[in-house]
Length: 316
Image (tube, rainbow, N blue to C red; front, side, top):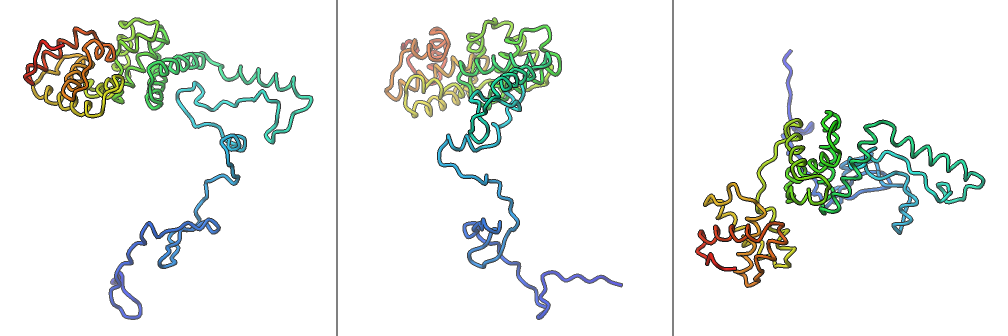
């Protein structure tokens, strides 16, 4: 028996029916009482049985929201236990805010054992020390949270593969921070990272190469353009300097000047030239100090840019 199938037909007329146009998004309203999305034009229930994920309580101040919330902070790799640990408060009050009478010694014991059970294995101790160092280093380098999260993820992977064994925690975490900065295009040089640690630049560079090789991480070359906004902001220059400096670097890249050069030095020289062009002059010494390079480096990179753009190579 042949199976017949008719699409979009009306039972009464047998004519093809046009598909109904979707309801405009701005016409949809949420009915919180019934958990439905309803169209204001047609009254059609577009979606029903919506789960309301909001809390059932209300709060009007941050303090009240903190007291009524029954969940902890979000999971994060920058804490050795991923943020799963329970914190026992020292206020000696229950969840409703009532004082706990006659249970002071019991709470002291609970706090003590809770602190002990947070760090049980050698890996926990290693991660706890490393995450504290990461937090310190991230604050000194003014790193955004997503960079610290990536550095923590890289370090945890290195611990699982046994790469930290026989090496100092500080050198590996510093290398992980540098890898994360290179991956996420956050301009921090190896000298900057080593400046805030007790580990030498050579040891951090060795661990950096180890992480790239053993964890199969691919990082691209550092673009001098990434350093420009940071240098301009530190010098207090207007946004037009950023735009002009980026244009100068793009032209210099086309002429093959940027290859094999320190990106921070190139960015500093481009900012110096751009500031001169817009009438916001800064000395090469000031620019070099902010960029973290020597004045000689800025002068040499400036001379290379001067040849391309026909500038006075002897200007200071």
